Amino acid sequence: MRLTSNPLEAAVALLDGHLAALPTETVYGLGARADQASAIARVYAVKGRPADHPLIVHVSGIEALDVWGQGLPIYAHTLAEMSWPGPLTLVVNRTPAALDFITGGQDSVAVRVSAHPLTAAVLSHLVELTGNPSIGIAAPSANRFGRVSPTSAKHVIEEFTGLMSDDDVVLDGGECSVGLESTIIDCTGNHPKLLRPGAITADDVTRITGLPCPSGSTVRASGTLASHYSPAASVRLISAADLPHLAGESSNGPRATIGLLATATIATPAGIVRLAAPETSDEYARVLYSALREADALGLQTVLAIAPHEAGVGAAIIDRLTRAAHGE
Ligand code: TXA
Ligand code: MG
Image 1 (cartoon, protein in one colour):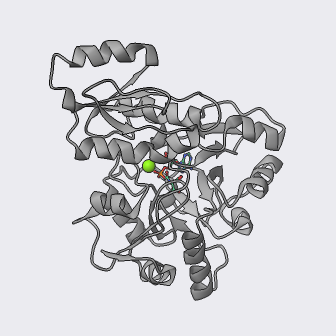
Image 2 (cartoon, protein in one colour):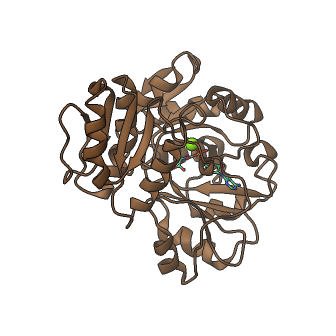
């Protein structure tokens, strides 16, 4: 694989049917042309992802929404207008543009416009090079299936060295500013439904659309599997009140094998490795995945995680920590 910060290089690689790992404001994605079965097959192979798990199509702007989706409710357009480019994915009824190898054979397709300037530039180049204004890049998070999503180019290289080929590209756009995957909203019914929490909350969706936004849906979303986002270390979601007791327990064993992830207001008990001490929930989201990777790099056995407040992105952090904790 080639590491570059030139979006044109990534666009040309994609055009030629190769893979390009791309920065978004949420996490890095492993991109391929959404209209090319062979390139998409490689995405699944490199990720080790089951073929019936659908992919998100990244497009250059809101106009592409009606090319990939049809029969959209008004609230879907409102959400796109108010939140794109941004950390929001909309699941809509598909048109024939969304082929079975993107949607896992479902009648819906997930569409997103990322705010990251480099990925926006890749899409602009592709639009220009192909003359197709609605061209899509299918990109799941650039990690092996079930593992922690990458928030830097370095993480992508760690995940895929030996798996990506010499013609594939990793586009380095620095560290992701959000750090958690996009909010996914199911827009196939008469009101929005939250499929995956993220930086844009269900309350935000209600404020924007004036409609309720309950959780859950019948469509498949692998990011909603009970066990996902898992490092090799086992994650335990604990309360601040349990920390002294658990830290004391660890003093009987090899203490350097326990890590702590908690907001800065919580002190580190002696002998425990502090993985991150974010000041805010936004910072917590930004550092969460690199902290989990750090735990593995240090060979820790256990990560004790104290969740932030549930407000704002806090709900998404709690969602990911809960799934990471199930991954043991
Ligand atoms: O922030 C993100 O969304 C990142 C960046 C790269 O855009 N992408 C990402 O992709 O997280 P992935 O594939 O790791 O997670 C996408 C989730 C999966 O859980 C998938 O099942 C769900 O979206 N999904 C995709 N298409 C869907 C559809 N038609 N209906 C329901 N869920 C869908
Ligand atoms: Mg993923």
